[in-house]
Image (cartoon, rainbow, N blue to C red):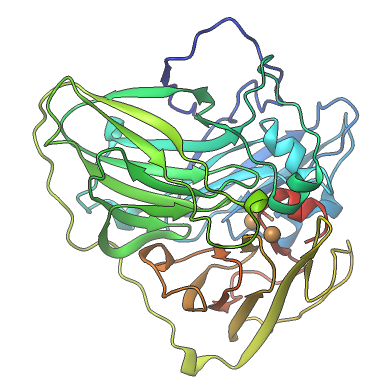
Length: 415
Ligand code: C2O
Ligand code: CU
Ligand code: CU
C-alpha cells in the first residue's frame, strides 16, 4: 500500500533525484497479518551499485535477512519468502549493502513493514484514517534540493545530520486532523539524527508501542526519544485544541551536555504541523494493551560485554571492525543473556541486533531508564559515557546475523 501523502507549505518548483522503490520514496508500505507468508522479488535496477534489503525488526530466517554477503549486483534479482509469525509491530525495511547502506538509505531505499496482529483487534485503538504511519528523516536542504552524499570528518564522527525534516518524504509537512484521538506510528529512518519528540504546546501524549509491538499499558509522557532505526507508537488526543488552530510535532534536540560542541545533536526541528479542523466523537481510551512477560536478570545464564569506542571517524565494538564472514559470538538458541554496552566515547550509538527483540534492563551513568525503554526493542540508545544492559534471548532462528550500530555512518565504517 502507499504511504499517506502529507500536505506541504514548501514552495514547489524543484525536483530531487532519489533512489526509489517501486517509484516511491519512502518505498511502499508492506502490511501483512501475523501468520501470513511474505513474498517479494528484489530487483536491483540501480546503476552500478550492489544492493540487498534487510527486514528490520522481522525475525526472518538467516538466508532472507539481508546480510551484506547476500547482496546482488545491478541487473540481478533475488526472491524473498518467509512466514511472519511474531507479535504485531511497526517494522521497516531498508538497504543493507556493504559500506553503501548510509548513502542508499539517505537517498530513499527504505519503507515501512507493518504486522497486524489479530490479538490486538479487540483493543480500543484508533484505526482507519486515525491510524497514521509517519516516516521521519532529516536531510540537508541545499539550494538545489538534491540528496548529495559525501561525508566530512564531522559527519563520520557524529553521523550525517540534516537541517530539515522530511515526513513521509514531505518537507514542511502538515496534516488536517479532527478533534479526536489518533494513533501515530513513528519511524526514525534518519542516518544519524536522534529525535526528541514533543508537541509545540507541550501537550501530554501516550506511548503505546515500541520496536517489538504494543506495551502492556499506555504511558503518559510529554516527550520521547526516537533514535535511528527505532519505532514508537503514540496516542494523541486533540479534543482540547480549538477548531482552526494547529499543533506541531517537533524534535527538541538532544541536550548538549556530552562531548564536544561539534559532535552535538542539539538542533530543534519542526516535523509535522497538525491543523485541527472539526469536532469528533471521542473513541474509548484503552486501559490495558498487550501484556507480556518481563524477563528477570536472575534468569540470565551469562553476560556479554561490548565496549563502544571511536577514533578519527572510525567506531569500534570491542576494538574490532566488521568483517564479512567472521563470527564473534555464538549465543546458544534459547539462552537468556545480558548484553552490556559501555559507551567510552563522545558520540551516541543506537545499537541494533538482528534476529531478536530484547528488553532494556538498566542504564548506568547518565540517569535512570525512561519510558521509551519499556516493551520490546531491537535498537537501544547508548549515550556518551553510559552503560546500558539489556536482556536478550535468540529463539526465533539460527544462523549468522548482524549486530551493529544503527548510526549508518558508523555502520558503514565498520561498527
Ligand atoms: Cu536496520 Cu542491520 O539494520
Ligand atoms: Cu535489523
Ligand atoms: Cu555508533
